[in-house]
Amino acid sequence: MVLMIAAEGGPKGGPSMPVPVHRDILVIVSFYLLGMSRSPIFKAMLVNEMEESRSDTIKISDMSYDALHAFVNFLHAEACVNEQMACELLVSAEKYQVEQLKAYCEKFLVSKLNWDNSIKYYAFAHQHNAKHLLEAATSLISDNLDKLRKRQEYPLLVEEDPCLGLELLKACLVRWENNAALDTSAK
Image (cartoon, rainbow, N blue to C red; front, top):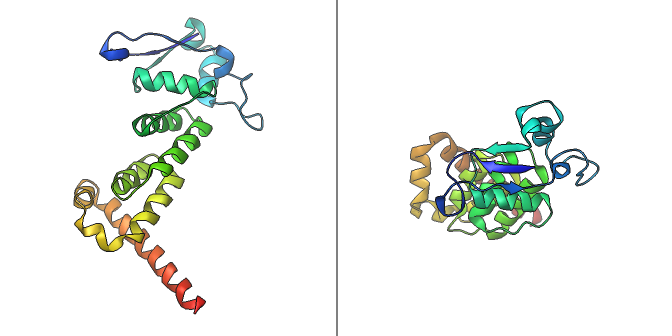
């Protein structure tokens, strides 16, 4: 069967090219860990008598061709990504409930986390329920709370989503207070 980008999203912006994938990889026979199917969403599309099952084609509308190709490679256990691809794949993995891919991308993004991208990844993690990345970004930001006001990204975050900006400050303060309490009890 094939996966296709629904719009003009093929390589170099041209027409979409099909990405072949074995049906069993998407359905029941392809188990990852503990007998769990890789994607319950794909399984539902293919086991039930939906259009995708009859046509052997699944159209994907919210992913680039390169991300789709990497997504299929991951399903075949051959994923290799960069930061941009990891973000795109994490979004797709969340949508299609491919938890192993989401965890893989989250772990990769945590390994790339630094002061310069911490606010961006904090907002991204919050938006896509990436708890491990959110915790790591919050930790890094709270360790550098005194520098936060000097960052251009923080006022932009507060302007775009005041609640998220406030939530970040609260999380940092709670972490800061907990660390201060631990330091006091250790003395």
